[in-house]
Image 1 (cartoon, rainbow, N blue to C red):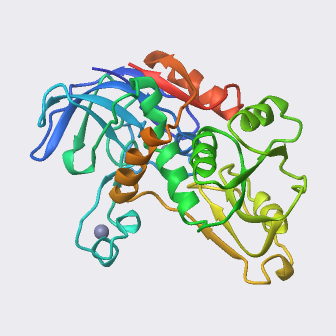
Image 2: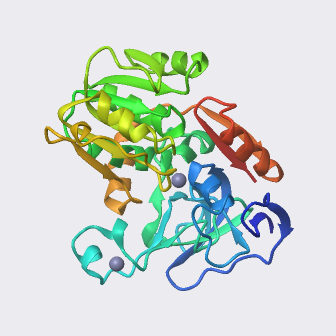
Length: 321
Ligand SMILES: [Zn+2]
Ligand SMILES: [Zn+2]
């Protein structure tokens, strides 16, 4: 099969002809229809998150057609959480997202920037009807992690979103559907993205350094910039929550305790549970969430990653083998 392989940090993906993968017991063999590109892929490329055993096929938002090991022809989604032990204290407590032995798709197992992929059948989700292959892909990480990030913000009414990319464009729709008010923060002067946020229901959009017109009850941070943490705390009302939704962030600058005072909460979101996936994929078609995607052929996966790095598209990038 053809694949785009990660070989070492700091290097672009390399197009390779790899041996076709074979499914083990309990695994499905998939023909990859589409695979979403995620900011985590940039962190892997840049060595900010380690790929333990390169070479590795990245890509953890796989929409695939079952060839073997399941119902032939069925469409399934493969998310970032690829395997857990099921026995540790976190798994047994319903917190498999924190499993220390977890294996992640496109990091510990080969992912979807390839023509074929195998996945543990227990960690695949059915793709909801009504979502074409391209539009479904960003639901599997941007959507899922975005959803978990919003859940961890509790029942906050005024929600700020820092970094209006793939996750934000989905979570904004969920928040509006739930009757919340959305305030979008982008790079300073990025009027295109601010207009996009308003189209999706944000009542205010501005630069990340700006103060919102009223204090926030929660702030969700999707951009990997540590300086957004004190900025978001400053924009948040007493008792509010700031949730960091990314796997990596640059160093958080020191800030005065008064920004955290008055029972503000600062927390991160790590990975997903299968329950998040089931809940979110049931909710998506009911809203219905619409994803905006830019498609790239497999051999141009590096271009997709580069465009993501430089914010050259609205919504999400999706690779099509
Ligand atoms: Zn991701
Ligand atoms: Zn575990």
